[in-house]
Length: 179
Length: 192
Image (cartoon, rainbow over the protein chains, first blue to last red):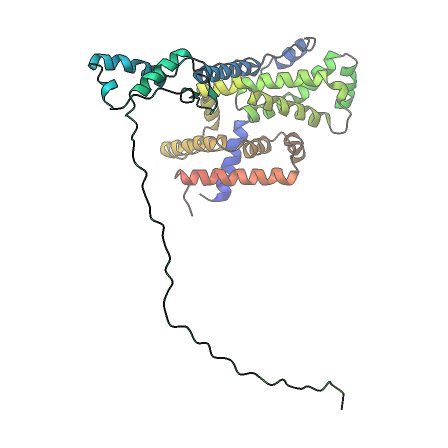
């Protein structure tokens, strides 16, 4: 099929796609509505858009809520349970190390949140941190390592002889136009 | 009586004069809406809204262009607003195309082939052509449908679509080219 023939067919189909007539009472309906005051046209967008925005806000709040609440993180709750498990085993955890178990310092008890800010822990968390510290191995006491100073010996070798360059006699040049 | 005279009388509160304007231009307004919306029911609503809006804005008609051009601009904006409305988009997603409308269009086509097989092939080709036209980008599709409706001059189409006449002509030509390419890709037309 040639392009010209196909174009004619395209035009014909396009014409039929816009072929139609308004209903027979179209004019009467328009005239009947002329006196109708232009009320607010109900548009679904005015309803759906605020509802959608509200839904997004609620979703964001629900998702972000765990990050802002003061409830202990699931990992923190796990550390609270740790001493109980030890007691069930026989309480050997505290005696595994030779030295005394280090007590958690106030610095160590500071909790760093996910956002990098440091806040003072509550009593509940202090107990948990102490339990974790009790599980820590004893501190190792080792003598400091002695390291000898590194000495640099003088290098022995033949001196490098450098030949003096011949001196060049200066060249006398007469100024231009002196003769 | 000219359109300008009818407008003047309608401004003075003569509904019959505006009724006459409706009678004169209802086909042009309706077909513009149909080109934009593709649905007879939506086109009728949009055309009616366009006439009502034109009536309320009669005072803004200064006569710089013809009344028909001024009216078509309003009608086109009304139809485009209708096309963009969320409800219509939703309905189009739920029910992509009114099957009865599709069938009525295709019944009108009634392609006459020499044999039943030829008629069926021709019918299928036209159906595919309509699909290809509907899948065009809005700019190309609007230009093609308005140009081929036979109701509007290129000047009127340019005013409606807010584009120069040269651009409108290019869009019509480009629309045909894209439709041809689409049909060739689908194997309906022999690639020469």
